[in-house]
Length: 386
Image 1 (spheres, rainbow, N blue to C red):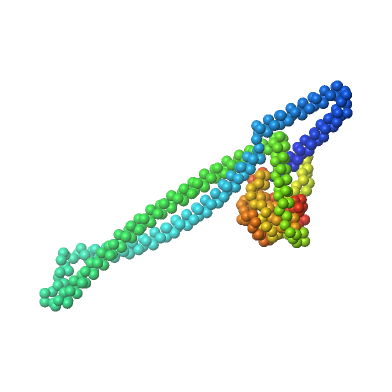
Image 2: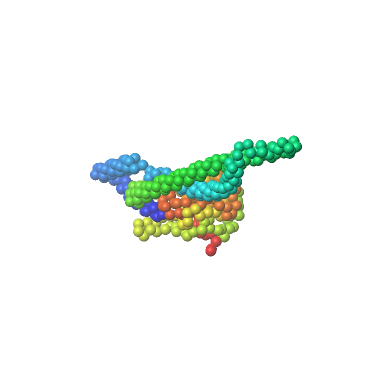
């Protein structure tokens, strides 16, 4: 989608350049006929029209602002919301697992309680069936002192055992009560997570709707396209300058032309070089390729190197640049996240992130470039044939 927008934008830029050449031709004619008053007046009128056009363009820019910046902000928010939803889903799974564990523990405690309750009831029945002072009957005046003492000790031990049984019963009742309270809290927490996830989904849908509305404006407003070209070209120039500054010692990267692996599994939907758009009758020069894939599909670095850049860049989303030495760099854009940072040393096939939504489209895709001394080359020439 991004490259389609660029195709239309380039057509507008070519029309604008043609107009400049036309205006330049008129200016030259006016200079050559400077002695002619009528021609001088035409030149003056033309200059006035140019100034008027510039003022109108400036006023339009002030009213409109930068839609690219708005889309960039929405893309950041979109990416953050997706990460929040993934975290909420993980929290919900963990909460459900804890609830199941709590239920299993509750069943175990109930079984233990039933066993203790049965023993406790039996002891109570025996105790209440015995009249008061029954233990004194064990004392026989005719028995010797040792037998009487043994009877007292035995009675005392029975009473202590009954007391411990009663204490265990009450303690287990309290534990079960607390367990049920904890289980109820877990249920409430799970319901809270589900509500949070539902709210996040509503916000995400509103985010997508707003983003689509802005994209519609970009498609149908010529002046916005003109502004977008300037911003995107500035970003491309910045990227070119950055890759030139990070040149390392020569490597054997050049020897691997035609044998590198694809950075991600998917389908190439936009190719390097000049692409023609029949609908808009325009031609655009693409500096890389776009690979359509499933959201979150792992993106792998094509060759060992050092991370030279890993940050959000307007027009590209999450952008990663890997320096392979010898002036060679590979560029990966539209990542959903980074799994590495600047100055990290990477090996071939190391995962550097996942496929995220395109900045100008909700279709997941990876934008991929290979550059030599800042100059883009066709990535498919470097990729081995499948």
